[in-house]
View 1 (tube, helix red, strand yellow):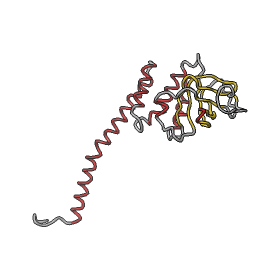
View 2 (cartoon, helix red, strand yellow):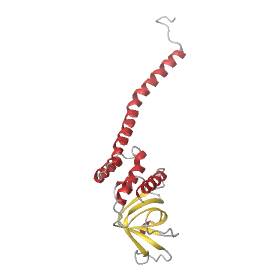
View 3 (cartoon, rainbow, N blue to C red):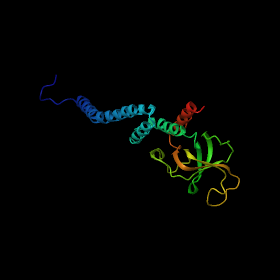
View 4 (cartoon, rainbow, N blue to C red):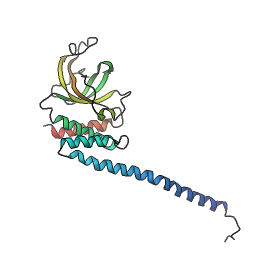
Length: 213
């Protein structure tokens, strides 16, 4: 037993210092962890509204979720995209709509080479078929993931099919390319090079398989 005047042994002092440091770390980190957990719970709770029967409410829910930004809304972003595509598809029976996975070939002219068609009745899978984005990409969906340096994209929106690109675009001729879909009315352009890219495509594919008969 140590007398009051005797110093603590070095090993005991080290253990006490380590304990104090651990407690301090918990005190500092706990509010941060709690904030992250609370945000995650809130995001998942709000996301329940994506199943609402009211189209306007679903739109508002998507906007609220995207407002959380990254990384808070990453876990539900594919679901948000799928919800948006499903809402647009619901009125594509009267207009021409399309959902493509495509690779950007000529950014200055808004040209993309179609790799896969998730929806587009007139697309026959011809190699080299193109789509062109004329309409300005719409809303926060197009800007949630970084666009800079991206090469592959999910594109959806409405427009028209052109027999060829010669009479539909400016610039030099594009001989040999047919079956061009022009996003002329509106478009959403989502980069797929991000780690969320595969999940976005699968979420959209799954949702469309549930509603397209």
